[in-house]
Image (cartoon, rainbow, N blue to C red; front, side):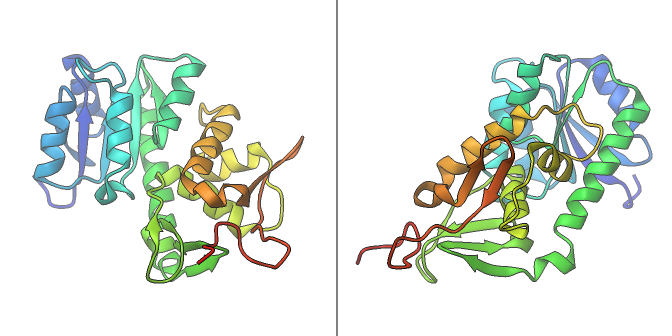
Length: 249
């Protein structure tokens, strides 16, 4: 097997779809197959991957909860995770992105679509963590951004707490920060975070914002809802100019 091939983990229990994905990505990726969450976690413990493809309807533990666990693993923060599944309702799509997926592809799919989606996602991730971005390290209020590591922490220098944002949560928050104080419409956030021509609805943005605010805790009010327009990032202070979330000690 050529060393130039990418490494992909396919978590899929149906042999016919394993075969179809292998055939579609032949010459581009070496595919490791896992039929359930247990096998997938064992495969991830054994080696690193450039891409993870997951079916939602796995035997035993479903793909949604598995994706959520993978997104909490700091080793996988920059690895694209894509659902390839027969569950094609809007609610399924929203749950998939809320779980931390970078893309959601319906079965049956055309091989050209799968290749194009993967190529676009890998290019987007590479741009996000490229050398030009990696140097960005800054504070906004009580939040410390380390863009190259896709990490946001809360507190003060030396006493920071990692917020463990998913890749899409990080991208949304960083997008809002970069455009501070401009308000971004949901459609613009969708386009910038998930790309063009994806099966993503605007409600997905609201779900991610809700999850993001929970993790931001005392600084949740930095992400401001602008009725009828969208979202903006605004560092909040009290009447004495103290940042929101600051310690009273």
